[in-house]
Image (spheres, helix red, strand yellow):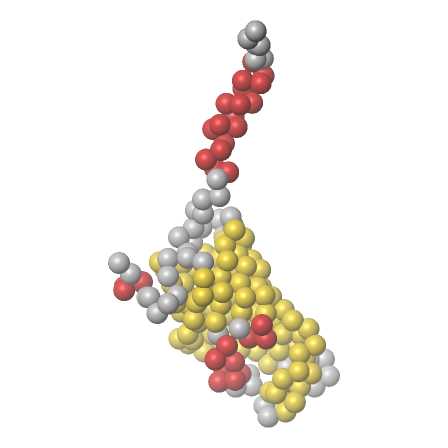
Length: 165
């Protein structure tokens, strides 16, 4: 016996079949996931001479899920969370950690919070350029409160855009 399928059920199947390719998880962004080395190209602000202290930790492990960007950042082992902007090639991410003990200006500091804000634009699948703001916040000692703002290049595996095949 053949069972008739209602018009509504057929319509639902048709909509699902048409929507399936968009639900497959294809990334509309050309930026590769993975490890990136961030190289400062211009210092915009460095209140306490932080750059030499933290530059060795300017690595980023980028993960992309839809529009959501997640990154493990080397400074204070921070996790950043953000998203791709509407135009699709630019993304932003923020993160913070609390109660950090570090040395700033030769002084031991207990920071209330360390914050990072990153804005970047994809140049090619293995490179993005942008600005990063690193802020040390201390309510107790004003000499421990510092900010570092840099323009940077983020490159994956030493493969800059002009070197991509």
